[in-house]
Length: 397
Image (cartoon, rainbow, N blue to C red; front, top):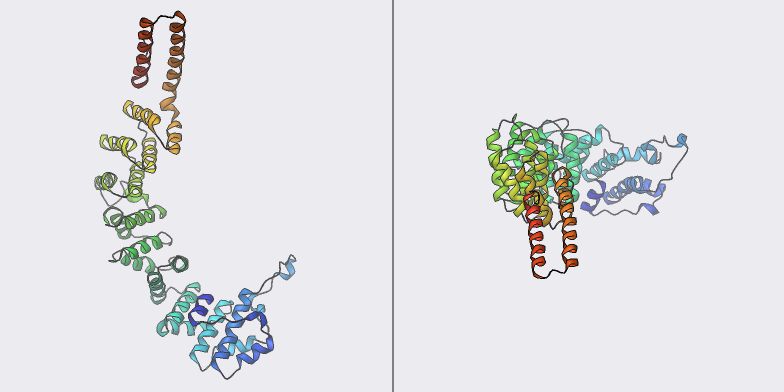
């Protein structure tokens, strides 16, 4: 917070060369710039100065206020009552940064939040949020900063503050839910990511809205963010029979996404959800087998394998499909997944090894007998028998 506020006002104090006497003169200087410079130098020195690793527990109990020399403490307190508003704001920022906040500093921050400029109001919102003041003004200012900047650092800081405030008020959920209807797809993504971080009770309407975005939003990144938000919030119950959405409608939407969505990650999420629902039908089985055979992305084929295992599909058509995929699968991770289903393939692999050994014995016998034409035909018959056995599973004659 202090670093951002200094950068906004272009303050860059050099605390390494500062002395107590120089700071005392600066805090009482008649020029506003010098007073602000001294205040910010004090705060920066407390936060950035190197600290010794003290092993003795007797010396580890020093409080935060002792980081500020005793000579400077009353002067810093006086700056909270300075006639200049910028000096008062700098003093409040300093007190919050070094852990010396009080009622006067809080009053200054509330005023800055209500009528201050962008830098002051953002600093005030952060300070008040850290004090767990969950007013609508604080929440709105944090959200406006996050949606205006759209950078990783601001988003991370805003989500940490919203996480703290969401434990005390439902305002965070309500205001983020309204952003899910934004006409800007990037705002919808930010809202989904923020919802996946916050605490508190999530309403059924909000869950339904996230589900709607996951299935119907025109932007693939929004659909992915909504699906991740539902997953991280552990809202899998949304896809169960206890949901207010009928299971038939859920399955219909997931099957449609699985077949038609152009983004492979969305397909993978839909296939995973089908496995988590636990309902089995011929259509679901056929689509999972189709995905194993024809989906281009290995991650989608892998999710289809996981769902087959989760749904315990073990009939002959599934086994045949897995065996065929075992031979044709180019992706090593998927190959390991298929091989791990040993109950489905180990018996046929043992039979294949046995018939291969018999083939080599028969080939050796034919060559030793030096039968040219007829024995070569016998060898071809053996090879054909092996291939038929491999793909049909019927015993050889």
